[in-house]
Amino acid sequence: MTDLISLDGTPAQRFAFGTMQFGENADEAASRAMFDACIDAGITHFDTANLYTGGASEEILGRLIAPLRDRLIIGTKIGYDAPDNAAVLRSQFDASRTRLGLDAVDILYLHRFNPNMAMEEQIELLAELQASGQTRYLALSNFAAWQVMKAQAIAHRLDTKIDVIQPMYSLVKRQAEVELLPMCASEGILAATYSPLGGGLLTGKYAKGGSGRLSEDHRYAARYGLDWMHNAAKALPEIALDLNTHPATLAVAWTASHPSRPAPILSARSLDQLQPSLDALTFEMPPELRDRLTALTPTPAPATDRIEENV
Image (cartoon, rainbow, N blue to C red):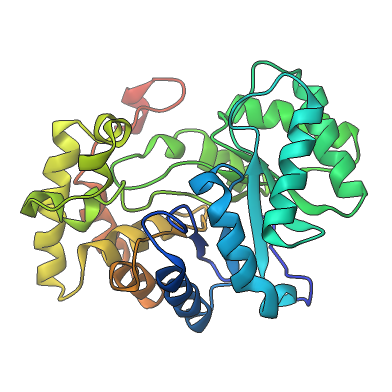
């Protein structure tokens, strides 16, 4: 598996922090408080994207990382709008570097699969940016397993490789278990997984009438709108109460405990909201507890759909 190393040789901690909320639901003071808490907890891997909060996420993160740059691992993403030429992607990356105040980023993602450009052209651009020292690790976000392996074949022809992927993964979004996480384990790719709390569903707040992404954004409401997801979110706090911990701590620790050793990307709007996720860094997840939590949600069918082979 790719081991992320900072410029000064500091290995990345298992967990990362995502700054999607910086500049919108988290102002500069709240962003700094969360950043400092992550640093204190040993997290050095920070994730953003060129489109997050209209660029404010990168700008705030750039100011926060400046004194510590060489010991941190910074990733950003380009291409969510699926442009049809490499010049647009390069321009987006240049804008990201400017906002971050960096000549180079550590991890550069294609934000999602782009059908408007040949895969070869996209990977060639990443390889060029890597060869010129503008990025160190090549990465893909929201790609299917076959798309990752197609990109990897192209990368190998260019004497480089895809180091990191970023799929969604949580107790209520387990599709990554079918092909993506086994692929990562087989091919030595790091899975930096996002939304370990299921858009906040697994914190239990919505069962109490709370608000957040699921109540404010129709896309998140649809993503986590199935009854069995909400049933799991009601059961998780009961287990957490028995264990004298927070449901968010359990949800994040469950994600991290997958045998492929993914690196969950934590995120929050405030330090108070973040703390239960940070507590997962030191939470022990015994196999019997993982099995108990896993049983709360349906196991996705195997890639061959031969379900009887799992019985």
